[in-house]
Length: 394
Image (tube, rainbow, N blue to C red):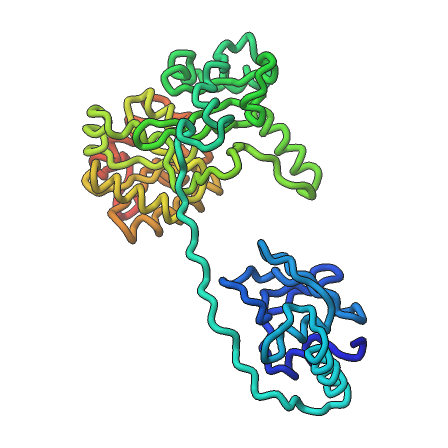
């Protein structure tokens, strides 16, 4: 066995190896064995110690767990009825003879190996979010009314959390209550529910029908942590700005989607299109200006979100999507991606950029807009005309 490589053994039995990946002392690859698997495995299911004299290996595919050495690998590559990787008696003698033949360079006397029957790749699981009230998890069902623990009293918050709201006066107690958002204190009694959201500004993500799908939190210390991360050479993992519960598919939802079917919102959308922004504060700020919008909760759009935005736009806003992502470098890159994705599905237009409007909105976010600034943008969106702008660039 020490004289035989994995590649030599596979070639002897006529087995084509998939791509091999070196991971530390192991070689990882998709399963290529005649082991009775029902579906294709991941590309790192088999872990083989190719430098080990015995070529010890283990399968990490779910519900398998087979393993052994070069003899068991040969048993699962050789034609005929295998012993499941544990050859005995005549089967063991055949494999021992094969190993001797490989070392001596004698070609295999077995008939050419037929490839294993094609294994259909598993169908991708549908990305779907279930309302918390319908969750199979009892603890999750108990989080439907998490906002009862929130506070909007700035005086009762830690300094950075209070500063977060002072910088955003549109997040008044009345507005926070209407959106069921607020600050979740770290210590709210013995009830430990909402643990990963404690110490964060927390928002609900609603379904189109108005059911709470999940809660997600914004770290009020993010800016300080991010500056420290940059100063430290970006060697550690980048700090998390928004925290979402594991298992929630945010890429198939749009923040604020539950408010689009309100009569007033639909009237405005017919004039302005479906306005697409980045974060929850952008959505909430525009709503205080009487402007319906939905948020990606990201500076990039997924194809599922693009399809949903196009569908909602065709239903409610004459088929037009209006992109209003942040005017910083990340947001500008996201704008280009949004325009590319959505233009394949429905008409799309850009509400602003770092060069439009004389560059006055460079590095700005929708949440920072004054009513006068929004009126200027709205006039352009509705009329297509911008003061001081012409086709000649004058």
